Length: 410
Image 1 (cartoon, rainbow, N blue to C red):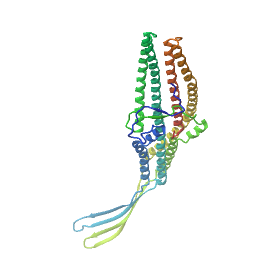
Image 2: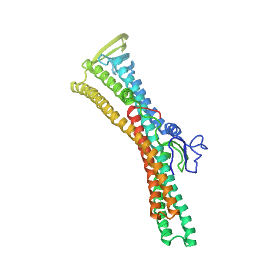
Image 3: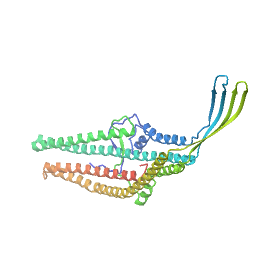
Image 4: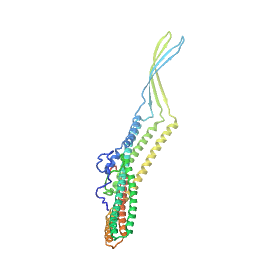
C-alpha cells in the first residue's frame, strides 16, 4: 500500500482533548509550533533574560545621591563646649563616564531580546522535528499494518484452499511464520511511535497520549537559493546579539578609559559652637575629599573589558564562517534527498505494487509458488518504508536548513 505525500495524512485513532486548542481537529505542524512557543516556562525564560538586562541597565543610570549629616560633639567640665554640625555632601565620579555605561546597558538589553528570538528559532525547529518524527513513525506503523493485512488476506485464501485440498500445509505454516515476523516488526514500530508521541507531547506541553496528526512528510518546496539563505543567515538573531554584546563590551572599555581619575566628595554645611560664659557662635564648614582606585584594580577591569570585546568578535567571526559552510552543505543535502524521495516513490513503490499483483495472480493460477508471493509482499513493505524514510530524511534536512538560516516559521 502506497502513501502519497501530496495529500493530507490523518493518522492514529485517538485525539487528546486537553492541553491544546481545537482538540477535535488533527494536530498540524503549525499547531505544534504554536503550542511549543506558548509554553509558560519558555516565555518566562525569554522574558526573564530581557527583564534582567533591563534591570542591570536601569542600575547603570543610578547616580550618587546627596548625603545629609548631623553631628553633635560635646565636652564636659568648666570649659566644656558643645558643637553641632549639619552638612550636605555629594560624591562626583570624575572618571565614571555615565553616558557610556548607560549605552552599554541599553546594548545588552537589545542583545537579550535577540537571544530570546534565537531561542524561539531553536524551539520552532525542535517542534517541527518532533512533529515529523511522530508523523514518520505513524506512517511506518501504517505501512507494516498494510503488510500484515496482505498476509492475512492471503492466509484466508490458503486456508480455504487447504480445506479443499488444493494447498499444502506448508503454505499455511509459512504464511503464519511470515505474519509472526511482520507482527514483531509492528511492535517495534509501535514502540518507536509511542516514544515519538511522548517527545511531541513534551515540547507542546500537552498531557501526552496518542494524538491525531495531519500533514505531508515530504517538504513541498526546495529550500531558497543559496544567496537568499546566506543573506538570511547573516541577520540571524544570535549574530545580532553577539554584535550588540560586542558594542556593550566596547562601551565598557571606553567607560574605563578614565578610571585613573578619582571620585570627588564635596561637603558643605553649618557649624554651631556653644561655649560656657561666652554664648553660642555659628559658622560654616567646607570639605573636599579625593578617593583614588588601586592601580591594579583599574587595570584588571580594563583587561576584562578588552578580553570580552575580543572574545565576542572572535565568536561572531566563527559563527559567520560556520553558517556559510553549513548552509551550502545543508541545502545540497535537502535538495538531493527531496529529489530522491520523489523519484523513489514514483518508481519503486508503483513497481512493487505491480509485482504484488503479478505474484498474486501467478499463485492463484499455479504459475508461481508462495515464496514468490511473500517476496513480493515483503518487497512492497520495504519499498513503502524506504519511501517514508527518504521523505522524512528530506524533511529533517529542510528543517536543518531553516535552523541554520535562522527561519523562525515553518
